[in-house]
Length: 446
Ligand code: PGA
Ligand code: ZN
Image (cartoon, rainbow, N blue to C red; front, side):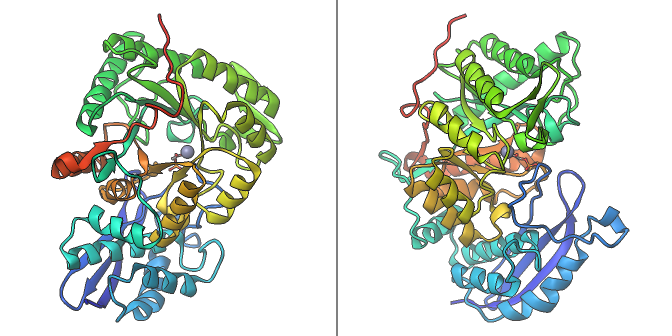
C-alpha cells in the first residue's frame, strides 16, 4: 500500500476570479492527486468556515496564504506516512488537527481540498476511475448505494439553473435559482439535450422581450432584470412549450429561494410584488406557487433559523414537493439529525465543502438516506474546473445533481464528466428517475 510522501498546496483562482486553495498529495509510489476548494456566495451560518487572509490587504483579504501555511506547518507533517487508501484515517487526522466545531483553525476550504486530493491520489494508486473508488469508500462508510434497477450505478438526474437571481445575479430577483428538471429523460445524454433546447429557446424569448440574455450569472444562467419572480417562472414555462415539451410531464421546475438572504427581522422581503411577508404568508405563497406551476422542488423556501416555519411547511407540502435544506442543514450531521427529529424538510443538498471532509460528507449522506431524505449533490456558485463532484454523485447513487447552467466551463466540467461516465458504464448505468414515481407528476394543459 502506498503511503503519503508529500502534501502541497497552492493558491489558484475559482470561477468568480477569487483565490482558492488547491491541494496536492504525492505518495511514495509516485501516485498523486489534486483537488481545489469551491466557494459559496449564499453561505449558511452553520457551514464549515473558510480560512482566508482577512487581515491582509492582498486580494481584498480573500487570499489563502494562511491556509497554505497551515498545510505546510501542520497538515503535511501529520499526514506524511499515512496509507493513502485510508480515507477515514486521513480525514480523522485532519479533524483532530483542526479541533474546532466549525473548522476555523484549518479552514473548511483547506480540509475539503486535502480530503479530495487524498481520494484522487488513492484512485490513481489503485488505478481506478474516481467514481469507482468513491463508491467503495461510500460502501465502507456504511452508505448503501441505491440499487439502480438492472444497472449497477445510478446517474443523477440534473436540476439545471436557467435564470439566476439573489446573490448570484446582483439581486435582480429575490429567488436565487429558477431551475428545470428533465424528469422523463431516459439517459443523462438525453437530459442534456432537453436542457440544451429549453436553454436556447429561453435565450431567444428573453432577447425578443427586450431583456439582456447575453450575460450570464455566477452559475451560468441568464440574469435578466425581470419584473418579478413569477415572470421568471412563466418565461421558463413558455420556453419549455416552445421546445415542444410538456411542462409538468417532460420537464418540471425547481426553485432555490435561498430565503435566508432576504429574511430580515422575521420578515421575508420578497419585493417587488410580494413585500415583507411573514412566515405564514410565505408558506401560503409556496402553496400557491406549487399549485399553479409544475414546481416539484423547493430549496431553502424559508430561512435557516425559521425552524417553526419549516415544520409547518413540511406538514403542508412535504408529501408532494421535494423540500430541500441547503443553508438549513449545511451538510452538517447535527443539524440534519435535529431537523429529521423535528420533521423538517424531506431532502438535503450535499455540498462537501460545507461539511469539510469527504468522510463527514458521506456520513451525512448515509444518515439522510437512512431516514428516507432525498439527496441532491451540489456545486457552489464559485466553483472550479474540476469534475470530482460528478464522480461523487455517481458513486453514491445520490439520484440528483445541481451544478448550475450549461454555460461556463466550471459547470460543464461536471456535466461532461457525467456524459463520460455514462458512456463508460454502458448498461451498468441508469439515469435516476426521482420524479417518476414518488411525487404525483404534474400535468398542466395550456
Ligand atoms: P452558493 O449557492 O454556492 O452561493 O451557496 C448555491 C446554492 O445556494 O445552492
Ligand atoms: Zn441553495
